[in-house]
Image (cartoon, rainbow, N blue to C red):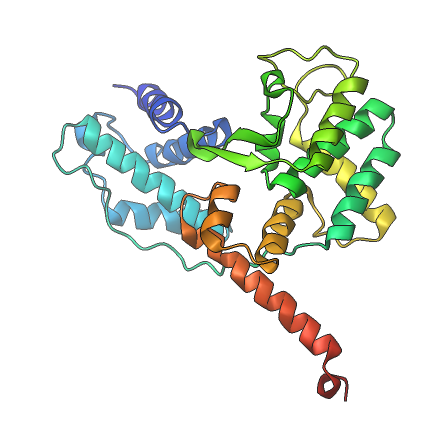
Length: 298
């Protein structure tokens, strides 16, 4: 067994059995590769004996390079997953990874924008585009983020077979998990406008949203369009495509949506991921109180 064989097996397991995204597979394989740089033997039985001391040494080296707590936590998760995989490949009955607690991470609160700002951002992106069909495309993508709570990767992964859009849309999220989200008329109309203007044929098994040269639309192009529109509208740097999804969640919660329903709409695996929006809503209420209460103005 060579180092390359081990990394190939690890990458295949992540992509095929765990259904991880290509980005996650690359990151996890790179993390395993750094670990293997310090090893002399690559048999599964040897790798299965890697323990907490090895993890500490590896993370200490990475921290010395200046990686953040968040990056260190991700590295630890990847390393523990790799060792668990090695133990299963070695045929061990207990394939659990070494126990080691990662660095504490302070969860940052999402910064939503107002409903008017969300709509104005979509309109500005449309108006600032080089060609009408590109503007219609970007407006449709942003309204899917704000109007349906999609992740940008989820919106860009939609295929032509999703058309014609009805009152609900089936979305494939992280880990291949599927969910159904309702679509407002304004979202359906925006997508229909893009389809009518697009110079490229909409093919059932190909990406719905295309780039200027006909290839799949990249997240970077959407982010650049939003950055230009954000500046023209005077919005803060936090007004990103991902902030539209945060705004969708926060505004629904503020209007009375319950956490379980919001969890389903967002496609969160655990309720804990959704509960952060209760903190966002409370923070917004506190801002309103501080800005409006007469004693705060004294």
